[in-house]
Length: 129
Image (cartoon, rainbow, N blue to C red; front, side):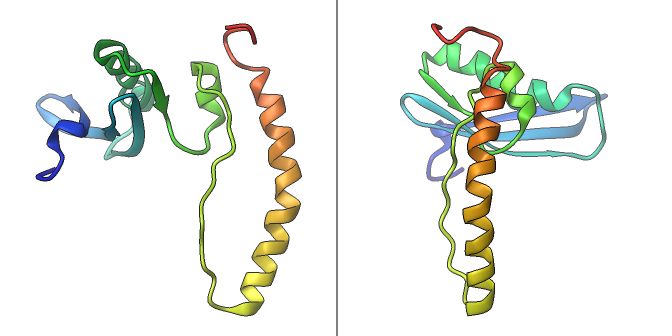
């Protein structure tokens, strides 16, 4: 926060002056990156408000063109976030684990492709938008 406070959006949820949840987002000149969420009690729809709706409002207010809501979560699709491939890099030290994980990733790739095609149909707008 000391090196880039002007690039942080912190959403805090209070109940009776007590913090019950928060979402930490980072942003660049054109993109909001939603990354971290935490709560110490359940409140219906609070996750969506703190992580998505407040972020969408922030993007509109600041004129940001993109909102990267992070990996995973089919619940994001119905809120207008397109499902996309997400990449990461890892080094697995143990050779047997490396082989097993690589085998799984290769078999998972087709399932992910199918899942993206299926969930893309759930978007709340048509493909021309």
